[in-house]
Image 1: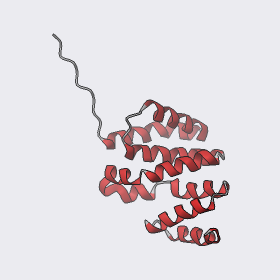
Image 2: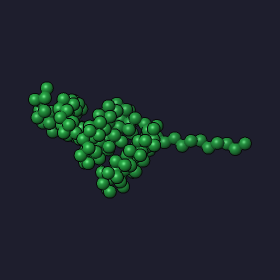
Image 3: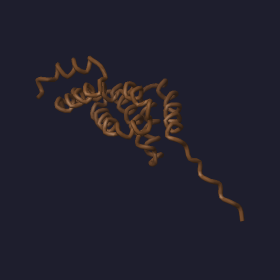
Length: 148
């Protein structure tokens, strides 16, 4: 009897690399093509590691913001930010660089502000400030402070 081949098991880093490599070409074409690629990836890869999903949702957030789809951008930002602990576990020592490369903070604030959800935009500012992501988030927080 023939032996069944073992399934290919990729490391989380390899899955990250695959996602980013697959995203490069569509993003050159435009945000609509990038969003289509990301939607297909998220639908087809139900078993994506949560750390990778954080980056995928971050990229969805960026593409939707570029397209002016604020509700979807806000939703994707919230999903990406909710998966930060998994991103940290997946990236280890590279977490800080991964965190600083996320669009979900900036675009999440923008999307929630566009939707009039200033309390949520303010909460994202507070989260970014708590993570020491830069003084510009403090300025954004100060400009939204009236919403408290």
